[in-house]
Length: 574
Image 1: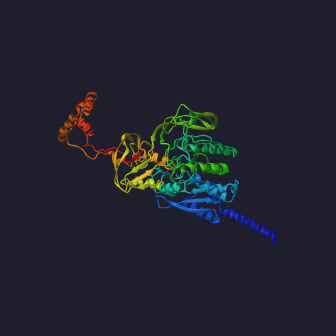
Image 2: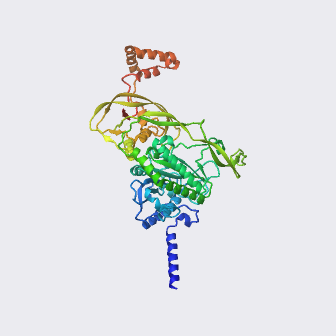
Image 3: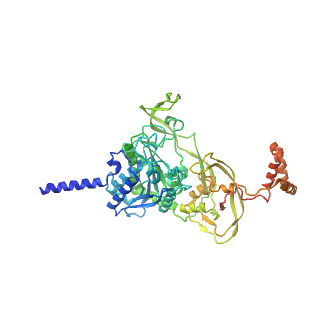
């Protein structure tokens, strides 16, 4: 009798232990995603059970004032372990990562579903539980009109109505400010961002993409290729079909798919600036929620086990250390800043899709795209996976930023870029950029009137550098980030996001009746300018008829015109 009581007690104890770490997703029958409070309390409970190798802390707050929590697993066996960051709920309507990460963290700690004990010493895993705390708490049934579950879910934007996956450069949100500080402080080598897709219909539950190789340091590209190849092989062993993230070349996947170009405003684009290999998981919106969570779990499990293999872990860490440790002076001056899809070069890949048609819908009386899931197909399609360099810059040895531009300097510091404060007023000969042309979106984009198609003219001139201004030495560690934010032609430069718009407005002017005599005197004293002026009148009839245009033309070529108009207040010492 005592033996049976002992066995029964042990059984009950084991069952209670298992129940203790069941996630809200599992308890719900795999239909619900964890709320902010459920997720927080569950991780606290898990950490308490594995306190020797797990921590649970806050990286800062979101705009709603709630802490953004991170769960860390680290055995401290290997100081050169690969640092991995997993990001969940950047879009809380796409919550698979939250629930998959909870189960994965538990299984790693309990050494379930993978021989974790043998590889855990090579990993330093950080899981941001629910990054967009604001949107996670803004919960309801209906924020995703074309998604199959869960029953309740969060909202895409944060408390300031910002899409946080467009905020990594401008950092308008407290969420992003907390993130970039944590990211640059910890110097991650591998990054996973979990999402749900929108768009076309196809057979896959799991699609994904990685950092574009064109933007990574060359030493990291073959490493990313090896990791990706082994990742796909492991997923194939698990019988999990997968494909590149689907952006259709035309309307449907049979026209081909285009490799997603993630500029630095996006998470993996930002990670690349910090020499971190990034992966984005995109599970298909219309597959069952439980299947999407399982696919996300499987991707992360395979990625971590692949990265933790001894040879891979050492290769990743050594390559990153050679590039990203601060202080190593940058010697290769050229940095690429713009690319364009090569439409003439493609890979051919297998793809599992559905037949489609365009029947007329009775609601609108117009044709609408319809996929027929009763008619699956297996075809080889074009994969547009190549981008050509369209623009580059010559990086200086030093950037100088006047202290007046505190917001920009603060952003640099936030991103781990050290500056030196100058102690004296000095006249230096520096290279400057004048904004030649740009276009601007017609309606606000993520809180800014974003510029694009920016062109510049560079010149060298004497510039007064004042005591208190900031100097940045260009290093191997910071070069890609500096090129992305300080060079105005870069897509996500601080100029294009509007941080220097004040320089685009001319402050001084002239009165025609006063200036016309001075203008005549300037023309007469400068034969070359006069010749150019007469040529302009001959070539442009409208200019020849406009006294205002002629006076402005002369004014802008005179010593009276402010040389700071359209001049970017970022100076370069070559």
